[in-house]
Length: 184
Image (cartoon, rainbow, N blue to C red; front, side, top):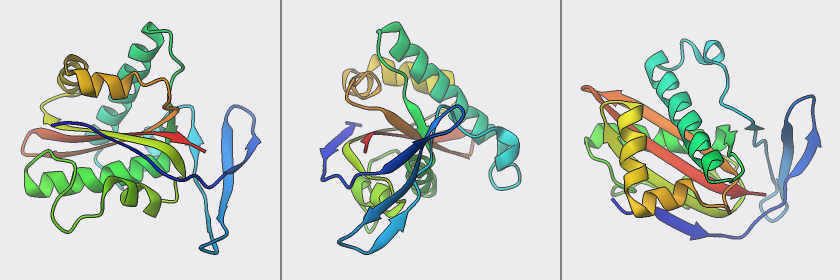
């Protein structure tokens, strides 16, 4: 599966520096008259905050991939990616679609495009890329992506600053979506 990369217009995000993380507060889309909150964190939320809403195995797998991706970036002298809950929401939505179709692909008939899925979550970006696959375990999935030139390029893209990962387990397979972005 070839990864996707696209460039779109940007709507700036207002930010403030909190105790430990740079957190976007609001993005105002003046042409749409809408306000969005786009949380950007140094790492995914702790598992207990998500308990009851999603499978713990899926959450652990998302965290494992996030850690592996940032380890690979550090090894190449690149900045680590920050976890973005809006990107994760878009990735999780698409992972559900892949599990329902029992196939790893970037879009299904009737489904919004990658850029539309991400915009619908409120994220604003300059660059956007996506890796999709299915596999039995996070280690296998990460190794598979790193052995593919195009997927590895997305993981190690110095233009990207944020990531959201969505994983849905179905019949022993982890349907995995990694959404990368240069957020504004």
